[in-house]
Image 1 (cartoon, rainbow, N blue to C red):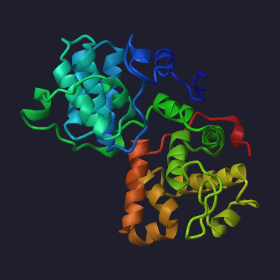
Image 2 (image 1 turned 60 degrees about the vertical axis):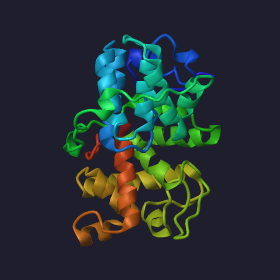
Image 3 (image 1 turned 90 degrees about the horizontal axis):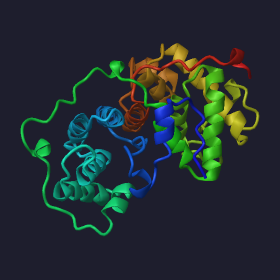
Length: 302
């Protein structure tokens, strides 16, 4: 079955997104969009730039960006650079270096690296770009980063188990009606419940978007175990937080986790390990410190 793409893609990206499996499935071009994984935003951006360079038939540029992320230990970047070197997509093939990188990614559980490495003897040579000179700096202005591309999120959603995919698609459909970017909504739901509508936390947070009873009542949720009611309540709360904190994703995430009053009390992200890790994950998934308004839908219909 072909993956269902719910969000707008360019014609090229829509074609490439179907290339999601083994090397045989991807043999005639760039691999599909990078997986939507919990990587530091800088590394995710370098991988995205490498993927974009591959689509534009700029293999040296792609290798450079992949290597920058691979040097910091990104399994996705190690896989993509290894694949590029192994198969020689516009570069001189270098199987020894390519299989070394694939083995590194496979050891970290990267499934596509494991598939591509199957039957091959790993090499023992790293590329010069990972061992020579200074590593590229990871300092950057988070607010200048672009949001995770739609095709990356669409690929992730298409690969979810059936029931979780149904929950994710519902959130995608509802989010713009609440002026919430579907990609941020999915990042929140993924971190809260992993798209399981019957989750109950030790703190009595309930359902898909882990609403506590006070929040559910505040936003008119009568049946917190009804997935759509729960999603609507959580999205209404996100809309309120986005307005309250002027689209600052870190503060909105912190408030969703710890409460808006706690964020106001500390004047920023509170010094709780759980909340700081939660904010880090949301920023890693969303990849931008600023909320991007979704394409307007009909009058925010409820």
